[in-house]
Image (cartoon, rainbow, N blue to C red; front, side, top):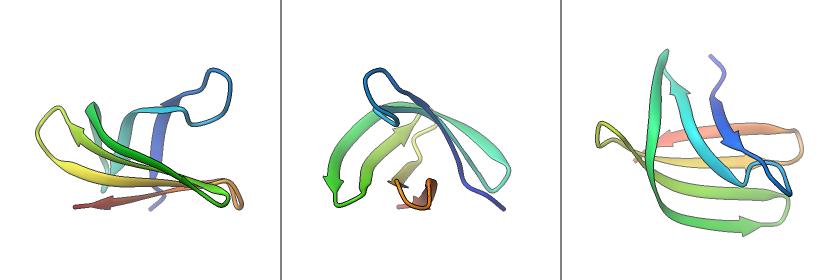
Length: 70
């Protein structure tokens, strides 16, 4: 199953994640706890509206998200 992240993109892609799909369930993101940038990737630690926590990593090559519960 593919990890899907809905994000806001103003001046560049994947500036702010808004929601994510994990194990067939859609979660609204309530808070971005941390963010970082690495070579060819962006990362976010988020909390969802129901209190779950996830680490989201967007890899520019091959243009995909990874979603990991924490």
